[in-house]
Length: 235
Length: 247
Ligand SMILES: Nc1ncnc2c1ncn2[C@@H]1O[C@H](COP(=O)(O)OP(=O)(O)O)[C@@H](O)[C@H]1O
Ligand SMILES: [Mg+2]
Image (cartoon, rainbow over all chains, first blue to last red; front, side, top):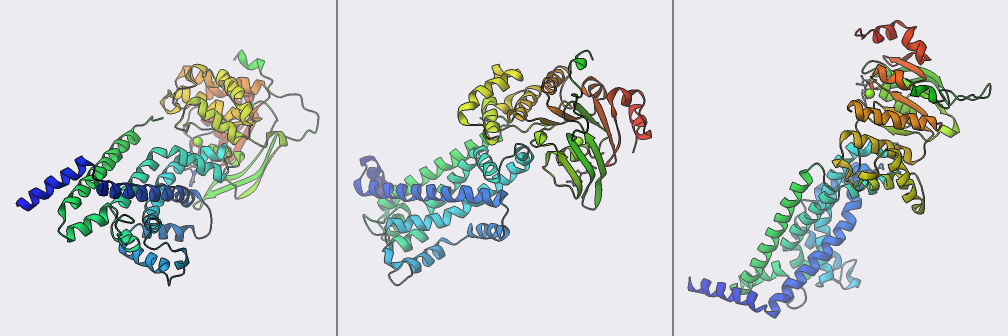
């Protein structure tokens, strides 16, 4: 018991002292996750809108693929990316394996389907309300998509936050393609897994607290936004 | 009634002029039901045409077909080049979740009005529809009447020569209705052709120069408004005007 109490005290110390190693890991996590979610939004928003209102062959199949990809097991994504990026793999020449870039790619693969699927749902609902009006205003399909995305912006923020939550908590894929290398590719989740297995609970606990607070904050923001979206006259 | 005389109901047109709107043999079915069954109509370049008929007669479908937002299964709709880009207003306006001004800016953008020309147009449209004081208000927070005035302003943004109104005042109180009617009359006074679907006989009498009576997907009567209301030719229109239920 006293070992645990010691670990908790030490974890608090790490946070209060703003320990350099601890901060480095938190910062890398924030960078990798933030960048991945930004890229996933840049792909997922237009992709979702296209799936909602686009008219092209294979839309149904693509929609199905996106939905299915939402449930991809992260370790499998990690494994496939590992095979693609490893020295012998087709993208081996890029030398990306065990770099933060590889981790960003893995998270983009995991998060984009979530954001695209949520976007598709929101834009579809809005389209039911707006399509006649937009056609009457002679909007082109691209203009209609742009208008619907802009109208959907509060819901798109929630989609981005949902993606952020998943990316931040993810461990399997970034472990495989990042390698959990100290000072290079060690992020919060992989550090927690490693430190815990080594019995070094202090750093694991300190990082766990940061992760917990961040995910609570994301969920609070989500709830707040949902309430605002529920109101009839926003913006 | 007095106001009606101010409006040129039908501009003097050169003899043998092409009609403004020529509809012939229009058919439309949905899920095996014939909803428009051979509508043929010829309408002028200007003036207000009221489209009357019982619920489910196909008035809204006909208006959407004229607007070009639903393709007919058979038949033709020919609009004079001047009328080729109609604007449409629905009973329930769907406004963007932005300010009144931004709604108009959006419509002007879609209409291809250059950015530099938009502010002046917006001021003009707000003025026309008595919305200047509400320019910055979120559109969705406006009252029903204000929202419909904004929908009218938005429809006029592209400077259409043909304005299609689908029961624009059906959910409004008398004051808001009068405001929409005034905007409609002013547009018609500038030479805009208006087709107005309405359930309100008195409104048709106030505004329309001619009346088309639609029944079960057919245009059963088309006559100048005074004649239609005094001596309707078809049994269906007689029954409708007498308030008898026709099915
Ligand atoms: N998309 C559709 N599919 C099937 N039936 C429709 C559709 N749109 C309209 N209808 C039917 O067509 C008929 C005419 O509709 P509408 O033009 O809206 O009538 P109204 O004269 O009251 O405006 C109604 O019976 C309506 O139920
Ligand atoms: Mg109708």
